[in-house]
Length: 173
Image (cartoon, rainbow, N blue to C red; front, side, top):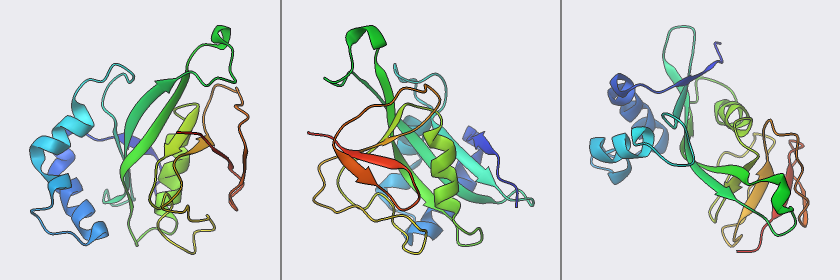
């Protein structure tokens, strides 16, 4: 199974739409897959992100088996001195993994988490599929920060650990 993370191109949108509709069991009229909205979410320039924000993973036949779109955020936690600079983060939207690839959603999340300092999840179930070895977050949780990527900085806030071993911190809203 191929596993490289690739940027979504505008010409991928019809195939991606079908993939997302299948994974989320949604109808073609679902708002989140309307072409104008998808182009805005995935390709419109954002001040906190260079380039497109939608990523795919494809199998050896070229079929999409996972997708995630970065919704970037930059912030400065009160526990980090100004001299350390801002902390980059993201919330992943339209996050989906196909059944044809075991743990596809986890795999793409791990790839995306390496792109920023933190991954944020607000409300809802952050990790939807049970059996993935990852704890499900409570819908009443105001926000979770999962340290990600490449900066090497750590941000210590109150928190625990997910079963997959990623540290998690509850951030005050």
